[in-house]
Image (tube, rainbow, N blue to C red; front, side, top):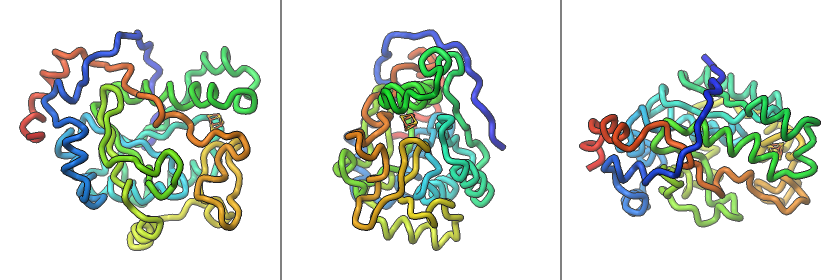
Length: 274
Ligand code: SF4
């Protein structure tokens, strides 16, 4: 069921023009206006219809609240590619949760993406980069692998919510991410909504929920939250860092298709977009 993505040698290319526009898809601002008041399932369905199942990916951390978004994914299309960035520092409980959620929801294309082994050896030979330069560690273990993993896709979906605060307080429902569109179906949702989705679908809880974790990432950079703290207070606690960076920089540096190839491949999706 799971597969490790092959590490194809990618040749850096100049940033291509916006693929969504080249494919005749609506721009991010138009979609954001269209979906501003839509519920999460409607947003997920629209992303699937407009982009097409072969060009849309979901990125999930399989964290404390991730199952809610994955339930929507399963309701729309359980064959949609789901990307997990397996940094090598994930909690065993997160990997167990991945297996439990996949089994429960019948997701059929979950891709556990690992960092490039050669780059790890070169840039983090002692596996201590998280302590000396966490931004560089996140770039090596998350940002760069995600950019590679998203190469075939025109758009991606993630589970950020405004109630998490910080840089997430004002996220739109749809935004431009380099050459890709990015959908945030849960942007407007509340914590109670997330709980309700999971409860109504009888989804398995992340094992660390019972241990008072409210947000989990990598082992060295996650602690339990204390009463009264924000949901993400246990992430990079005391460092000033609040995000890994995958949402702060564009993932659209690389595209596997040239524009003419993309246009040809996208012909059957243009009608759906209009
Ligand atoms: S969250 Fe911590 S361990 Fe994980 S990639 Fe970022 S700095 Fe490294």
